[in-house]
Each structure stands twice: as C-alpha cells, then as structure tokens.
Image (cartoon, rainbow, N blue to C red; front, side):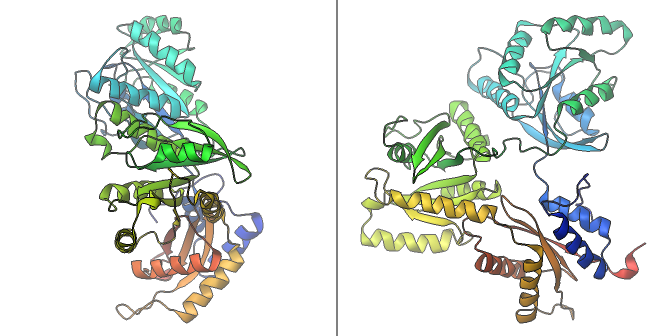
Length: 486
C-alpha cells in the first residue's frame, strides 16, 4: 500500500481494547498487522506540523525549500519577488514528516501586489508551528531583516536563524555577525550547494512539535468556534450583530465592508460561543488582488480555526457557483456544517418553491448539512441556529465502537451485497473508525468498492449513527492476494 503513514502510535484514536479487537480481525482475514496499523494511522492522522520559511526578497528561501525537499519544486530565478503565494510541500527529515511553507519576500511599507505578498508571509509566521528565518549572510542584517525580527517576536513562534549563502569557511564570519539580530545562533548554510542544511534542519525539527499538531488547531476546551462564511453582502455581519444583541461589527449596504475576521464571544442559548465574522469570498483567491486577496486568505484561516462553519446564503437570489464553492471549502476543511438561508423574510411563495428546487439540484452532495431559514435583519428563527450548530458538532465528534461498527457492516454485507463485477463480488471484511472531527473510517475489503457502493455505505452510516451536519471520510484498503505476498 502506497499511502501508509508510519508513526510511533499506529492506533489512530482507538483505545487499547478496540485496537486489539481490530488487529485480531485483521489477522484472521490474512492482512499484515503492520500494514493494517499503518493504514489506521493514515486515516486518523492529523495535520502535519508546519515549518514556514520567511525572509526578505532574494535571500534564497525557495532554493532552501528545494534543498529541504530534495527536489526542485519551488520556482527559483535570480531576481527578487518570484515567489508570491504561500506554498505548502510535504517533507521528511530524520524519519519525521512535516510541511514546509514557502513564502514570498517580506518588505515593509509596500503597496499593491507587494503588500499582498508581504501579508502572505505574515500569515505564515502566525500560523506555522516554527519558522526558519533566512538572511543573506553576504549582505548582513538589513533594516528589513530587523523589521522581520519584530514580527517574529510578536508571533511568538520558535525561530531558527538561517544564514544563507555561506559557501565556504571564509564566509562563516559573516554568519557569526548575525548574532546581532537577537534570535540566537545563526546556522551557516549554503542552500545552493547543501552545505550546513542538515544541522539547520536538525534545529528546526527540535523546534517543531513531536506529534502532528493542529496548526490552525481546534482549541482544547473553551468556547466553541463558529466561522460565519459566505459571499459578500449575504448578511454575515448583520447575523453576528443580531446574535450578539448589539452592533459589534460594521454593516453597510456596500459589499465587502468586512476585511479581517472579527472574533466575538457571544452568549447564545445558555452557552458562550466564539463567532468569527469573515470577509466575503468573492472569487478564486488567485484571481484577487490587494486587500480582497488578503481578506480571502484570512477567511480561509478563520475556517481552519473553527469547529463548525455556518455558510450564509442569500435566499432571495439563486444559489450561485460561488455559494457552492464556499460550501465545498468548508467540507474539504473537515468542518461541521450549517447552511443558513438568510433574508428568508423577503421571500414570497414562488421564490421559496424555486429555492427548494435549487437546493435539490445544486446542493445534492450535502443532504446531511444542517439547515436553518433565518432573517438576520428581523431576527426571525434565530433561536434555531444554536440547536443546528450543536447537532452538527455532535455528529462531528461522534465515535462508533469497533464491535458495533462491524456488526453494522456485517448487516449491510448480508442485506445489500456489492454488485458482481467481472465475475467477482467484493465485500467489506471489517472496519474501524480511525478518528473524529470529522469522523474518519477505514474499511478493509476483499476487492475494489465502487463509488456508488461507498456512497451507500456512507448514507447508511449516517442513518444508523446520527452523523448529522458533518462530512465523513471513508478510505478502503483492499486485501492483497495471498499469493502476491513476499
């Protein structure tokens, strides 16, 4: 199996008894226990820790990223400003897997596209688990480098100082001069030739968390985080003001008033919630520029921090491709999901009829999402919002015991077997839930399971175990033919 992930603990989120029961099933069916354990870990694996590579333009960040990856992935040219976006790559060093985040050059007091690039780099500093700060040792510490140091101190993340372009022993004195930045020992490196990169990476790994961390993570304890997302001018800020009972954020008829996510602690339904109002997502991020570009990045980050996404849709207008894309963004981020159809008070009977037809046609992939019809302006049906959010979070956190799950899978196989294809009839042998938030399942089968049958299994899982308001991830592992094992 090519998608295995080997970790120190290969049990996903299974307890000792469940894991032992599951491995016994695997052995009985002829699976290699080591491979099965790896596949559970793969399905239950959280996000990898993130190492951001930052610095001013043309100090060799992308060259260093390519050196870390061991292949040419990041675009490199001998001129500043080639990299603009944050780009993530998976990397491995000394047996540990992590993500490397390449960023554009940070500059101070810039406008337009350069400002958007700088904003990306700042975002990387805020969200990464650790930072490699790259400085050109042949130039020394500049005013821009000093400004980056201030940003890094504000972000509070572990920093490894990389003195790049040290191509020989004679240049190491230039690297030593970078102690003046106050970030600790400068690591002399030649990203172009590979000199010193191993020692620098060892220091970076020491700065990264051992276990895969939720980089944008779900906070343990505290108020539940709810992200309000949607197109511009669908009423996100009005909704936040209504649930807060006061004007917490600016509301204007002009679309796009909100630029940055606004976090608010709000008492609602007898509980404290953290609502995050976000900028409207206009179109694909790479087609945006300036402040809108930065706003969409911050919105995506707010979604990653949240536990549940409330997607607002303007019910008075037809469901757009953009609405569907925003919903897909929330589903792919693995968040619990509530669809709030706003401006419900403005709808007549004809519009309500056509809206229902649009939902059946355009949102057919998410019949499981919680739905509320509200009016942020009048407050109509706002009391339905909290129960919908709570139901979605409950489904998002639901765990099915291994024994109960396999009894359920046995019933499915008996009552609704997989269709015969090519003279063969694959069947589900056993399965486990490898993780939650969102629920992740691994099914072990005797052959390939068609997409339609997987959707059937998912639908039955939802019906049986009340997975309302949450995406479900199902991965299938096919048993190799016994004769093919070596």
